[in-house]
Length: 113
Image (cartoon, rainbow, N blue to C red; front, top):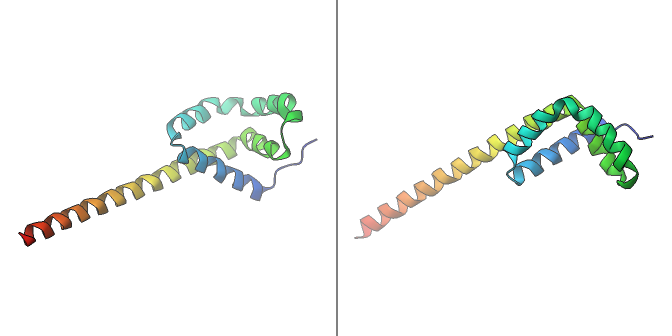
Protein backbone atom coordinates (compact mmCIF):
# COMPACT_ATOMS: atom_id res chain seq x y z
CA UNK A 1 0.00 0.00 0.00
CA UNK A 2 2.84 2.42 0.84
CA UNK A 3 5.95 2.88 -1.23
CA UNK A 4 9.29 2.13 0.37
CA UNK A 5 11.25 5.24 1.36
CA UNK A 6 14.41 5.76 -0.69
CA UNK A 7 17.74 5.77 1.17
CA UNK A 8 18.31 9.41 0.21
CA UNK A 9 14.91 10.45 1.54
CA UNK A 10 15.51 8.39 4.68
CA UNK A 11 18.81 10.21 5.36
CA UNK A 12 17.10 13.55 4.73
CA UNK A 13 14.38 12.70 7.26
CA UNK A 14 16.94 11.52 9.84
CA UNK A 15 18.84 14.80 9.49
CA UNK A 16 15.65 16.87 9.70
CA UNK A 17 14.48 15.06 12.85
CA UNK A 18 17.89 15.31 14.56
CA UNK A 19 18.20 19.03 13.76
CA UNK A 20 14.68 19.72 15.06
CA UNK A 21 15.48 17.94 18.33
CA UNK A 22 18.73 19.87 18.85
CA UNK A 23 17.20 23.19 17.77
CA UNK A 24 14.44 22.82 20.37
CA UNK A 25 17.05 21.79 22.97
CA UNK A 26 15.19 18.56 23.70
CA UNK A 27 18.19 16.26 23.33
CA UNK A 28 17.95 14.51 26.70
CA UNK A 29 14.20 13.80 26.61
CA UNK A 30 14.37 12.70 22.98
CA UNK A 31 17.28 10.34 23.61
CA UNK A 32 15.55 8.91 26.67
CA UNK A 33 12.30 8.40 24.76
CA UNK A 34 13.92 6.90 21.66
CA UNK A 35 16.13 4.54 23.67
CA UNK A 36 13.23 3.44 25.89
CA UNK A 37 10.80 2.80 23.05
CA UNK A 38 13.25 1.06 20.70
CA UNK A 39 11.72 -2.44 21.07
CA UNK A 40 8.25 -1.07 20.21
CA UNK A 41 9.04 0.83 17.00
CA UNK A 42 7.91 -1.73 14.49
CA UNK A 43 4.62 -2.41 16.26
CA UNK A 44 4.03 1.30 16.90
CA UNK A 45 4.73 2.10 13.26
CA UNK A 46 2.22 -0.46 12.06
CA UNK A 47 -0.41 0.81 14.47
CA UNK A 48 0.25 4.39 13.33
CA UNK A 49 -0.08 3.35 9.68
CA UNK A 50 -3.32 1.50 10.36
CA UNK A 51 -5.02 4.08 12.59
CA UNK A 52 -3.56 7.35 11.35
CA UNK A 53 -2.52 6.42 7.81
CA UNK A 54 -5.74 7.38 6.07
CA UNK A 55 -5.64 10.83 7.70
CA UNK A 56 -1.97 11.66 7.24
CA UNK A 57 -0.50 13.38 4.20
CA UNK A 58 1.83 11.28 2.06
CA UNK A 59 5.17 12.55 3.49
CA UNK A 60 4.12 11.45 6.97
CA UNK A 61 4.36 7.82 5.85
CA UNK A 62 8.06 8.39 5.14
CA UNK A 63 8.55 9.51 8.74
CA UNK A 64 6.66 6.50 10.07
CA UNK A 65 8.84 4.16 8.02
CA UNK A 66 11.97 5.78 9.45
CA UNK A 67 10.74 5.22 13.01
CA UNK A 68 9.91 1.59 12.22
CA UNK A 69 13.55 0.87 11.39
CA UNK A 70 15.78 0.26 14.41
CA UNK A 71 18.94 1.21 12.50
CA UNK A 72 17.40 4.50 11.39
CA UNK A 73 16.49 5.32 14.99
CA UNK A 74 20.08 4.57 16.03
CA UNK A 75 21.24 6.96 13.29
CA UNK A 76 18.91 9.64 14.66
CA UNK A 77 20.35 9.14 18.15
CA UNK A 78 23.93 9.33 16.86
CA UNK A 79 23.19 12.42 14.77
CA UNK A 80 21.52 14.15 17.75
CA UNK A 81 24.60 13.46 19.87
CA UNK A 82 26.92 14.73 17.11
CA UNK A 83 24.90 17.91 16.57
CA UNK A 84 24.73 18.53 20.32
CA UNK A 85 28.50 18.16 20.61
CA UNK A 86 29.02 20.59 17.69
CA UNK A 87 26.61 23.07 19.27
CA UNK A 88 28.37 22.86 22.64
CA UNK A 89 31.80 23.32 21.04
CA UNK A 90 30.56 26.39 19.18
CA UNK A 91 29.07 27.84 22.38
CA UNK A 92 32.34 27.27 24.24
CA UNK A 93 34.33 28.86 21.45
CA UNK A 94 32.06 31.90 21.41
CA UNK A 95 32.25 32.19 25.21
CA UNK A 96 36.05 32.05 25.11
CA UNK A 97 36.16 34.73 22.41
CA UNK A 98 33.84 37.00 24.36
CA UNK A 99 35.97 36.51 27.48
CA UNK A 100 39.10 37.34 25.47
CA UNK A 101 37.46 40.46 24.08
CA UNK A 102 36.40 41.44 27.57
CA UNK A 103 39.97 41.07 28.79
CA UNK A 104 41.32 43.12 25.87
CA UNK A 105 38.78 45.89 26.53
CA UNK A 106 39.77 45.99 30.21
CA UNK A 107 43.45 46.19 29.29
CA UNK A 108 42.74 49.03 26.87
CA UNK A 109 40.86 50.96 29.58
CA UNK A 110 43.70 50.38 32.04
CA UNK A 111 46.29 51.64 29.56
CA UNK A 112 44.25 54.77 28.83
CA UNK A 113 44.24 55.77 32.49
